[in-house]
Every structure is written in structure tokens, then in C-alpha cells.
Image (tube, rainbow over all chains, first blue to last red):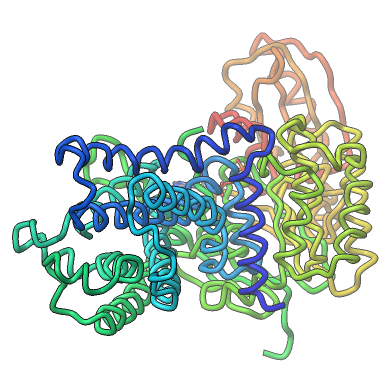
Length: 284
Length: 338
Ligand SMILES: Nc1ncnc2c1ncn2[C@@H]1O[C@H](COP(=O)(O)OP(=O)(O)OP(=O)(O)O)[C@@H](O)[C@H]1O
Ligand SMILES: [Mg+2]
């Protein structure tokens, strides 16, 4: 097996061992699945209160779906990037990982896989709840499965590499720093139209949103689940793009993000090796 | 180059920029390695001996691709560590003796298994090596324990075992026996020696500040202080430098001023420091008759002689001869404890 495949496989195994702390199955379920589902639902109920229970506005479905898939963003970004903090500061193992012949990108992506899996369960539960209890597109037969699968896969890969970019920042940040990931996820929540169409934001924020692959990813997922026509009718700022165009932009911007992340991580790694940060333990 | 060394450094310099607090830009660069030239041959058990802060760990970090040199080059198995780290990593492994790290939720076996997989070992080989290493460090009965349940020393042993799993061509051990009990240290030293002997083509570099460890284990020893290699030879040859000289160790009641001893004629090198409530004086004398002058100087200073011992030169004496201070004296001055 090649180094890359080995790194991915072993890292995924390790990530899973750490994530699924089976000595505390209840804690695991609560933290990994119930918590994201609950926070996704809080927002939905807020909407329902404000709109006085109006399920029928298609904008509700639009918000619901975007919000549900956004669970992935925090999970993947943090799952990948916090590996650096965990391995270095918590387990003290980053140097030994680095001394062994791993392929670091695959290692980091692998470590993020467990969180991606638990996030998948949370996303599915949230979507199922929407379909069953709130009437968000309960019809499985009209879902555009190929579009869904392609969009989901490309988007998750992109998210994984954005996690690597964050990992680079954490690698050269002197202090134990969990906040970076949360802050980035928060900003993306605002910019990428997770809970409202980007068309409601001021122009300059809209442009920021348009520059991020996640915006197109969410749009693609919504179109796959809710139907292109319905989504385009909502005038969310991306209605002029056909679905193949959305897919193309998603692909292109994801590729760009991947290259950028790899380049940036390399640069960070070099800085870290110049400054002796790979085995630095700050807090303990 | 016709001969290829297992480890080779040329003018290796490492400067740490120390940032002061309060955010001021003023930083005092610190030279941890100051032009290190060294060559370690394939099959050698090579020791790096020096006091705390000498630069041993810094050198190991550079050689194991964790740190970049500020200038100079380092090659491991002929591969430049800065230019081609991945190629180096395929050939090496490293253990920091004091480390008690590990993935606490994994069992001891799983912690080790994980690393065998990074190196691409097949399952059978992996199991065999893990079993063998656990036996050597005496952790067989802990194989199935979660590693967070281990004691400090047991964690160190687990980490020690990890270093040998991939049967590396070149192995780096940074103070492998630090903090371990006497019996365990002895077992590990024996194993280290055997490991190199039984495997032609394997090279091992270890750092230590235990003189005896260096003397007992190493084919060759480099004495390093303040980032410079002061001497590098077999322990026997190093000690031969003091051939003809007489080496004395005196213990006297506490003495404030010890400088006067170094100025006595016939004293080739001297080191004195406090230890356990008395003062230890180490002399290297060109001429044994100088002892008489020393004893009267002790008496004049008002101190009393507790013990006097003449011995064969040790690496400690070689160190005093080179640096003008004993290892423990330096470590007291720098205030570092390990
Ligand atoms: N990250 C760092 N930043 C600043 N200075 C450092 C850093 N790491 C090491 N140093 C300094 O470099 C010098 C050499 O340190 P090093 O750890 O290599 O010593 P050592 O020989 O391994 O000592 P010991 O026996 O205590 O382990 C020391 O004076 C130390 O203070
Ligand atoms: Mg050290």
C-alpha cells in the first residue's frame, strides 16, 4: 500500500478511536450527533416562531436544507484542523507522527473522517426530521441523486482541504487555539448563505460569499434536494446560474481552494520547522 | 564523495530567536549549535555527551527533520535533511527519553500497532515486533491496557519500544534512560548495544549527560558544550588524552572561594563545586607532587579534608579537561534540572 493510502487509513482509524469514545457511548451520541442536530433545529424553530408557523413558504425549505448541510462545515474544518492541536498539545505525538513517513495531507484528512461520519448521521437525522415532521420535501423520488452525490463529494473534499489550511494556521500559532476554527466556521455561516439567501447581504459581503466554494456547494445541494426550478425562483442571488454552471464553479473553486490550501500548509510547515514549533507544547 | 556516512553535518548552525514578552520586537538570538561538524559511520553506536543546554536535542531535531538548521547542512544516510525530509523519515526513527506521550484512549498495543502501519509493516511482522519490544521493555502484561493507565516510566517504555518498530537504518535516542529506574536503564542499555551489534548496517546516535552511559555504550563519543563539539573519539582514546596526568577528586567541608586552586602551578585543570553540603574539587595534575600544595591550600583556606581519591581518568575528567568545568557544575550554573 502506498504511503498516502496508509496515512489515510491509519489516521481514519485513529480518528475513529478517539471520536467514538466507547467507554462513554452516551456522551459520544450526545456530543457528536444530538448537539449538531439540536443547534440546527433551534434556528428552524426560531424561523417558525417569526413566520408564525409558515411551513409552506419555499424559502423555509431553502433555509432548512442549507442549515442542515452546514453541520458538515464545522465538523470537517475542526475535525481536520484540530488534529494539529490535539496531536501536538494534548497527546504530544505530533513530532513522532512527523518523524514517520506519513503523507501529512492524507493523515490530516484521515483524522477528519470520523467527524465527517458522525456529521453525516447528524445531517441525515436533521433532513429526515424536516421531511417527516416539517414537510420539507418528503418525496425521495424527486431528489436529483447524481447531482446530490457529486456536489456532496466535491464539497466535502473542498472542506477537508480548507481544514488543512486551518491546520496550517494552527501549526504556526504559538498558543493552544481552538477558537480559530470556530471563528472561521461562524464567518462562513454568515457569508455562504447557509440560513438566508446571500442576496439579502450588502454587496461587498455578497462578493465575499461568491468567492467561497461553500456557497455553490450549498446551492447545488439545495437544487439537488428541492429541485432547480424551485430554488431559482427564490432569487437568492445565484438564480442566473444554471445547475451545470453551479457545478462547474464549485469544481473550479474547490480545485483552487485545494491548491491554495496545500501551498499555504507547506509554507506553514516550513515556518514551523524554522521556528521549532512542531514539537512545541505550550500549555502544559 | 567516495565514503558515505550514516550521519554527516557540515558547519551546522542553529540560532533560536527568543522573543521577549510584552510584544517588543527586540529579540536576542541564541546560538544553540555553533558550527557543528561531525561524521558518524554506518554501524556505529555514537554518543553525544554534554551538559543541559549544550545543543544535543537541537541537533537531534535537525537530523530527524523536525527543525531546520539556520545554516550548514546535515545528511542522514546521504540524504539532505532540509531538502528531502520525507526520504530521511523512511530511514529513521527517534525516541525522546523523557516523553510520556501517547494516545491515551488506545491500548499500548494499539499505540504501537498504529506506527507499524505508518511504516507499512505487514500484520505478522508488526505483531512479532510489537510482542518482542513489549517483552524487552517489560510491558507484556500491559499490552491490552489503555495507555493513559500507565505510570510515567511505563509510558516512557512504550515510547522507547515505538522507536524500534520499523527497524530503522538510523535510530536517534535522545536521553533514552532519562528518569528510568536503575534496573530498567541497565536492561535498555544492554538492548541498545545488542541492537546495533546484531544488525549490520544499523546506526544509532544517542545523547546523554550520563558519563557512564556514554562510556559503557558508545563506540565513539562527541563531547559537546555550548553548541560546539570539543572532542570526538572512542571513549578509550578520549581518556588517553589524560594519560600521564594524575586525576584526583577531593571532598572538603564547604568552601566559598575555589578559584585559587586553578592558579596553583602544576594544576592542569580544575573544577570545583558544591555537592550535598560539601565542596567537590576535581584536579587534573601534570605532576602528582602538586597534591601537597593543594592540601596545604585547603588547610589554609580553613576547610577540612573529608575524602581524597585518585582514580583512572573518566570521561568526566576529559570533560573537565576540555571545558574547565565539570558537567554537574555547568548544570548547576545554568540552573537546569533534568
Ligand atoms: N525553541 C527554543 N527557543 C529558544 N531557545 C531554545 C529553544 N530550544 C532550545 N533552546 C535553547 O538552545 C539551547 C540548546 O538546547 P537543547 O535542548 O538542544 O539542549 P540539550 O543539550 O538537549 O540539553 P538537555 O540536556 O537539557 O536536554 C538551550 O540553551 C536552550 O535554552
Ligand atoms: Mg535535550
